[in-house]
Image (cartoon, rainbow, N blue to C red):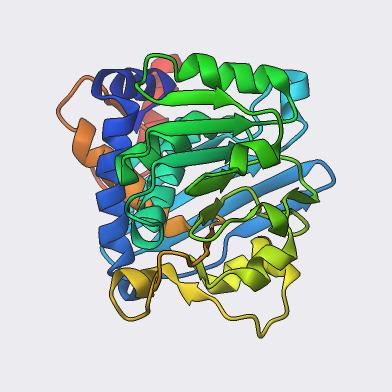
Length: 344
């Protein structure tokens, strides 16, 4: 039998424990695995692109356990009443090859993305940061806001989106959270005076949602929306101005992240090197830092491993029978032969 966490179980777990609490715990799980980066298999995600979106597989292993995530990205889906991003994942035992957990990962990906942003912000942003600007009010926005509070103690959020209804949705969903949330009138209005800026738009284009003149000394930018070839959010001049640009897996980010706009010689720093003290992070309060995040399989591995540990023995998980298990491992046919006799 294999453990299974479907959407109903995930919803009840997050509602019971609290999204911000889970993001905070996931931050520690992601950070710990990032600090052991060298033990992981590292492969850029396997992508199948179409004119309307992308379907990807994201695999990795630490030698003891293996995980993969199936995920799509279809920016036009909301117009059809569908999610832009959906996902599910599998965690397996390397020694036997047997799956241990199958989990929904649409909600979980939002949680782990917020956790990863939090890990980066805690390492790179000014520790006295209080104000967050959210550029993009889609599915990730509320999770990112709660993640920044878990990471830095952010207390004020300004949100901007080209869709007024999306802005209203974020303001409504964060009402009662304790965060002061303001609907901005433009990207420039949202960013003005912000300590941390998170860009999380969905359009699959080389867009410029932030320009260099909006960036103030001391800002930290979480650029999480540029996540496939031909999709960026930042003015290239912002990257040129930045004192440090951190990435997850450089080989993947060069293809999919903001730095796809830059020459191959453009210098970047691995986030795990900063976390391990092998590379410098923010050096001065007025530095501008950027986390060019595209999402990496190891973060999904961390999330699946964490979920399994958290829900085992609770009613937030069930068992499903998806691995054929004949009494004689060499006699698989006995399973179907028995069924054939019953139906005769």
